[in-house]
Amino acid sequence: MEPLARQHPAGGSFVCALKGGDAEGADSGPEKGNYFKIICDRVGVRLAMSLRALRRDSLAGALRILSPVSRRLLGKIAIVTGAGGGIGRAICLAYADEGAALVCGDINHEAAHETVAQIKARGGRAAVVIGDLAREQTSLDLIAAARAEFGGLTTVVNSAIRDVSYLPVTELPLIEWQQSLDVNLTGPFLLLKHAIPVMIEGGGGSIILIASQLALTPKPGRAWYSSQKGALISLVKALAVDHSAQNIRANTLSPGPTADQRFFSQWPNEAKAHEHASTLFGRLGTPAEMAAGAVFLASDESSFMTGSDLLIDGGYTAV
Image: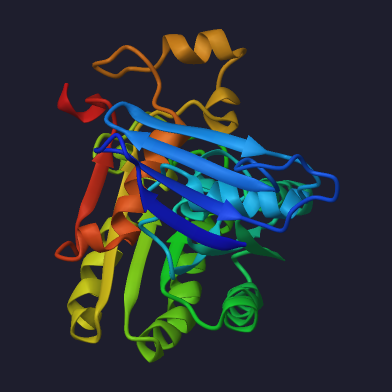
């Protein structure tokens, strides 16, 4: 497709067309052929499309180009773990919409492939790696996929989580403590151990570890969760000290209670889950609201931010 642009005669608006070859038998005149036309004015964007003989992939690509999304992550290459659902999937979709290429990692084969399918359906670029983050080989596979598929690595988002029983430390089996620790803290360590040198080779990048508001305000039976999420907040501070000179930024994002399957699974039904939002807005956050924070942390808009925690909790920790 050949991009064309011209000033609209009415002033203050313009017409931009992505023009393909004429369809056989198309009508004559100025509307002839396959084209996309957007008219931008003060109230928004209106899109006119002729779909005659238009291939589906051309449509997807054109819609990405004409999207009102600002594409703040164009040129970024991101690994996202825990990509199979909830906040992790929302981050993947938001990153793809903003122009990033994705390596989606998850232990759940079906869920990870569904995320990649959704990205590609939106015209984005994504690869998938299936594996347990507790295994060092999974981290190596994620990084190898980023280099092989997209040529490097600029962004790492760790959203993987291993949940265990909600019990006080006096009752929590040691095996469950170790299982959670292996994924929730050792997993990010292994990933970053191998990812940071690749990011340095490419000139730097951004690390985003998903923590939690419960790192600041624990709930009963969550000693394993609060301590491991709190450790991630400390870890990014140490990473910032060690790697800021190499243009590596490291931050955590701490979501509050979020309307996803993981939160819903704690309650008999979704209605009961919403009753326990415990936020000042009286509702749960959405995965998309958390993903917006992750976009900010990966973008150049947060270029002066490192060693910090971005708390998006609807006022949960304010009371």
